[in-house]
Amino acid sequence: MKYDELDLMELFLSESESLTDNIGDGNITYKISKDDFTLKIFIRTYENQISVFLTYKEKDIFNGNFDNITELKKEDMYLRVLRENSTIASLCFGTILSISIENQ
Image (cartoon, rainbow, N blue to C red; front, side):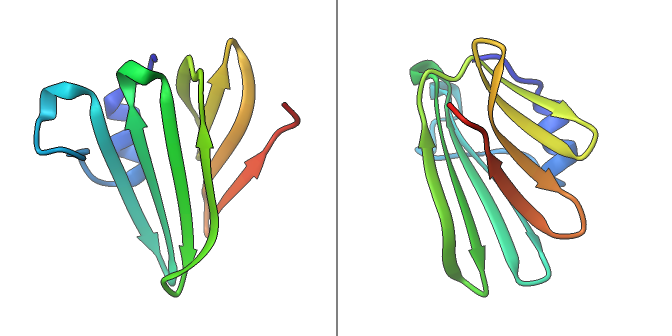
């Protein structure tokens, strides 16, 4: 899976954290909070999988698992989740954090 760590740091306003306390195993997470919304993404680099979680006031409003991801790409205030050059999901880092799922 291809992604630019600096782009992710810019969108999430923080560095990644290891899911397993082993930074070299490719299992990382990013998290951002705005107002009462929290967006988390878990990246499993070597399995080409990501999980996305969006909560509002600590209540789940979306969670999704995506397989066969080839790239995470920053475009302005969006993070595009791509599978073989097709966007399957877009995470918006605007005034309100949001997620849109494309037809797959």
